Image (cartoon, rainbow, N blue to C red; front, side):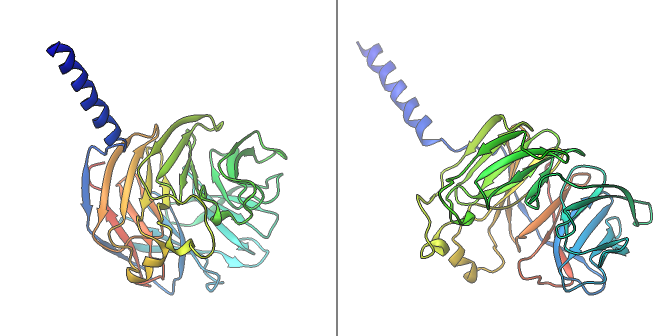
Length: 333
């Protein structure tokens, strides 16, 4: 009888422990120390892309004569400046730097028939046009590149779905619904999030839930990573700033997903404009936690990771310091 009682007690203890440890655990944790990368010339960075050993910086619309700056990461030297506003060679009406794991730099011109330019970078840091493609489907700026022919788009302004296309497709090959189609404003949907992809995976990180979906490139579900978080049941304009932000930014490399977790509400950003205390979480392509980094300095709103050196380069939300980028060395990867 005592043996039966002991077995039952052990099972209960195991059950309670299992329920109390539902969050996936990171096997390692490190603290990141902020460094700064000096910029040259007049800049207003809004986006970054990395093609080792080069870093490409996209400037805001105010820099109409030098849209893209190309830096050598070996010495932080500005190698070249590229792109002007216009319709001629090397000119763009409304360019968008696309993040991809392709060897080329991709620039989509959102107001020029969504034409996408594929550029190589030569040894001198100069852009060399390799190819031009135009998607058959309209309305694709919210996209993530899978490979040189496929991309996935977030159709957030029409329906809360992810859709896989080739550049020649007029209809999606596969579709996955993540949110409530009744909600018209995307960021008012509790399931609103950010989309990332590479040649093996499509990943969706929720903004208001501490949850990540890992899928293959056909939108077949591989793994859901879910943590405890104060997620909203519904969102109104009155409560929007009080909702705790989960994953606010990310980067999909060839080897890992890097997801920036805030953990505070939008209304508290004013009290901590540098987002200090943000956490960078790293997962492998199957959704397994690898390492968690706590930032002791300014956290970026947009970043890329050079996986040749495992160095993070980021932009601060108000462009300060305006003549520097944020740099963090990711130890342990």
